[in-house]
Image 1 (cartoon, rainbow, N blue to C red):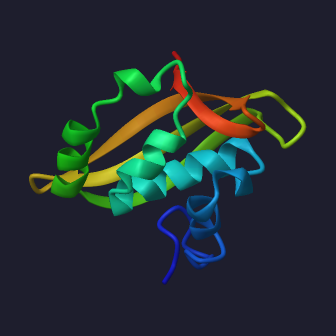
Image 2 (cartoon, rainbow, N blue to C red):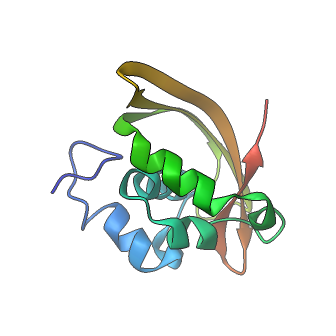
Length: 128
């Protein structure tokens, strides 16, 4: 099965590794890709574990789960990654996540901020 975040790699060799252990995300972009795939597969427990301790309390898991089940995910495009290597402590990933909802194609275009917490990457927030 091809990974939803990348049409060239299998799920098991890509996000499947990160879903097994968040410590397998060596870069902010790898965590971003694993989070997109978690939305596709409605893996709410993983999304919770990939949130920063500062922001997890604001994430509405039930509402998000219901929404992710109601849309058809199409693809993820990474526009730009700033920092976020395995040697950094903070990184930014600009992306476009395409989905179909109510027969219409739509896109989430965002720039996410990630940081290292307890020696692994976590999602912090969206920035402008």
